[in-house]
Image (spheres, rainbow, N blue to C red):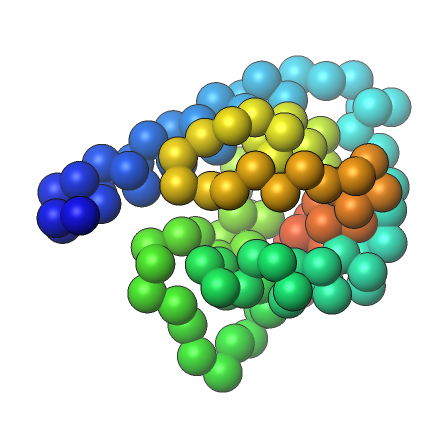
Length: 118
């Protein structure tokens, strides 16, 4: 894939994420309450996501895939656990469909949201 197509793919993925954030940003405060186990989410992220994303706050080295870091995702304006749930359940771009269980989804999103505080 040439550089122009890669850049377009990244832009499309970020637009989808942005749309999910805006859509989920309007959910009620009750629905946006954090749930899940952030520690278990980090383990899941290190297992399934680290081949494309930098998943830890201070990585020893990065990836060259162009995928945003989990810390950058967490810092996006209006980022909530619900917006992440929506995004991860919507097919998009180069990201594989991992078929996460409800518990795995809760844990992974709790971990990413925990990076807002870090």
